[in-house]
Image 1 (tube, protein in one colour):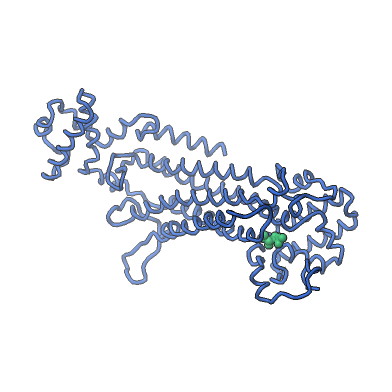
Image 2 (cartoon, helix red, strand yellow; image 1 turned 180 degrees about the vertical axis):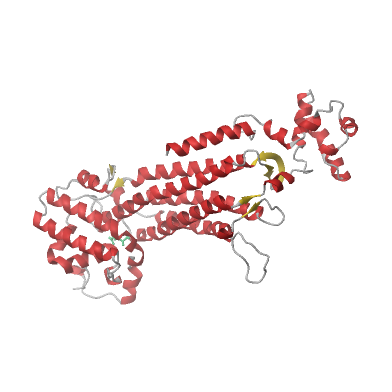
Length: 460
Ligand code: ARG
């Protein structure tokens, strides 16, 4: 017989390298705490149902607690011979308490066991992800408070478009992160489903009490279908999709930080603690951590595509392919936690060069829409106003004269509707404050949205 826990029907031994190939212990070691928690709940239920005696339960719990101590003390030794964390713990339990350890697996399969551990693992960690998102939202709100009146060019196609409040820009990211927060909250719902009790795939003949186990473990719901319970990885896919979208947001912000700390833009300066120098060029101050965050986005996207591809085409129920579900989730969790922390620090400590942002609006023609709107309000059709202002812009560029510096007679040559008050209209402050439409960048709107953001944070 093979020396495996499942070795009854085997006569030969697997080669060592085959054991290595099949094992997942290097990864699922991370599930150790959840595995023990799940086993204690399962054993407690078995005893309550009269499937184990109280004495057997005590022995099993004592053994599992001892293993937990070893894991905490980092003295727990594992082997690829025992494939994964579940079998390593069971093997150790057998070593500690003898054959009664074998009763723990009554009415359970590794298929529902691993799914339960994985759900628990994520369920325990989603609140921390949400907390980190909230931390970054707080940093954005704090900075926005200081920058409602900071004006800068708003961009489309990375060309100066119209002036905006920098506070408005920061709150855009607040709202993006709020949706991320909501997505992870939704993710909690599908992570809160307990697979245990589905056994291998079809349920069990033992009189188990799944609701009791769910209560013990803090799960709100049970999977209603045993096949679904052991073959569902939607909760992991949702996590990866949410992480990918979050990373897309952070990567966009990273890109702006990298651009805006460049010599050409010079809108921001990162603190020394969140930037790096060059080993050869003494003047360099690089936005390394923003770049690295942007780069790590690729890995998280890859994990999402990886698991989607693992799951596609898998017949119900469990297939060993599904062992590949954990690496990406573990790695993405670590990545988003770190990246969120880095962004929170970068934002809280960077210097906003308000004067440079404001100066970038000088002579950039980002007030051209103001002039067109001004003409429209005086009765000119918008398309005609667009053309009139377009030719003024052309003229201005040729002469090196921004709209706000053109003499009134010049402007009036383009349209008699223009008078002295136009110079007020052409100021970036006027342009921003005129955008009072719901969601627009007017400072009083930004003030209001800032209050809403603060209220959202306080309610969490
Ligand atoms: N290590 C496996 C995994 O992570 C555990 C489940 C194995 N079940 C089985 N029937 N081989 O998916």
